[in-house]
Image (cartoon, rainbow, N blue to C red; front, side):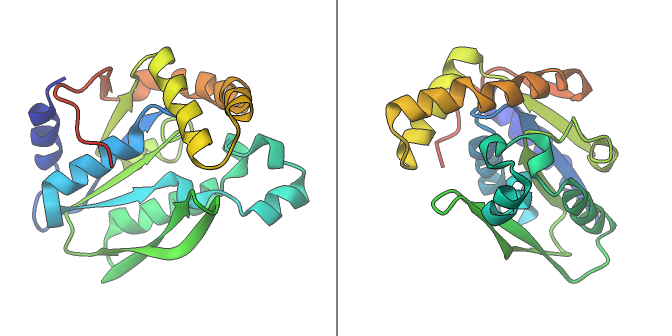
Length: 207
């Protein structure tokens, strides 16, 4: 799909004086955060970015639950907290709403890291499970599903895991293990999207 067409489609949702939410879903490594950031950068002050990953449970809580080895699975997020935030953003009755942000360099969410003012007409949210959790889809004015293909997605995942400190062997094990199990869950949600994107031509610059 042409990059300009995606920007035009997102810009049509950014109506001054209104508030809409655009969701970008896809499996781990699909390129959701890169695409979402590129769209926000293109729209400037008309858009803000909120990542679902900000609702990861903290590592200490995952350890307490015995779920550390499944980090990234649907039940290792505060899904209700994410839905509550989206509802606040959709209602747009607060001057500013603060969203959390996931910091990969520490593998932890940071609360209150992203301010969204009431004058921002379009909030773009991205994450694996936007179309899996039933309460999320009704809050989205439009949902895009990013599917670049299995090989490219896996290569990106392995490279990401290595970049953040895993050995190549550990990176491949993670990509083919829990990441792949989560990817299969996410792939089944694609029919709920308004638009499925396999490639962007020309692709946005990496962010």
